[in-house]
Image 1 (spheres, one colour):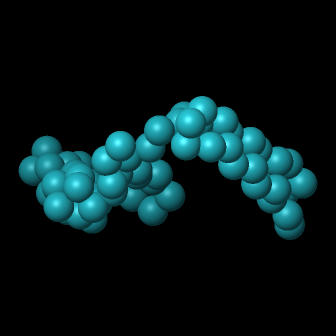
Image 2 (tube, rainbow, N blue to C red):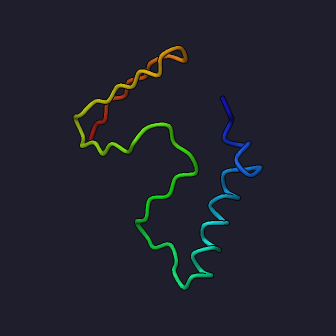
Length: 68
């Protein structure tokens, strides 16, 4: 399994590339845009009071509870 620092040397380099590529196209990132530099699951938006659990098999499981 790769590590985030292996993405173009550092995840922020990918973010800088994206920002520069958008500018070259006359576009740009806006406040509130969500950018990931690598994810293994789809986005899940949760509200306070909800919980989430993920099972990644051999690497293990994780759970989190969101509070207000």
